[in-house]
Image (cartoon, rainbow, N blue to C red; front, top):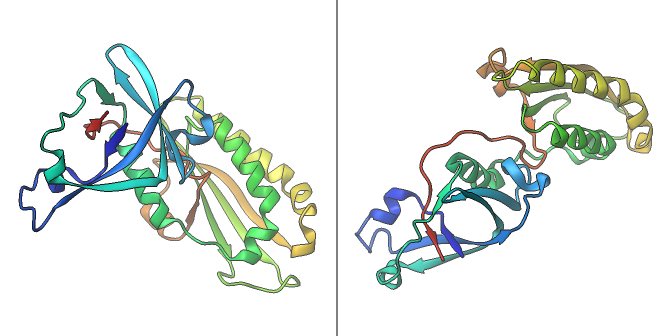
Length: 234
């Protein structure tokens, strides 16, 4: 099975000099979704729900398994209309995320390795209510082990259900409480001072906040929305 991932306008453009190809990503049906691969958490593998009539099926897409096909070869192929994508935005965001991931300094990553593992565990358990984890740190560069980083963690949660607020606050408190013990596991790489860890609703988190922080991807946390679906060929 293959899913067309070129833009709709590019697919429909009949000027073959300008847009001669359609890009596809290969997919296979899996029996159950893996929570580590849903909602764009992982930049390499995506489990994506489609509707087949009244039945929900899950497709597994691998980012590296792409190909381009000449439009002239597609003229005789009919699209499969029985598959309806649950969320086009998840697919779009997942495809784009491979190219916009922020590279943290290696010296910071090494110090926070146990912290990141803990964040991933907590985030994946509560992925339906957590929109993103946003980090701010100083200094921005690589530093030697004897110099400390300062770190601020924001847990951004969605507001469509009242239980998401205490859930996010519980995660923030848990990270803050566990932080010293987690840092002890990587102390040979240097120190990180946690200046703040707090839960912030999507309504309170501003564009300025977004500019001043970077998203830590649980290899890519939670994308939600609906709109139309891309074409599926089988």
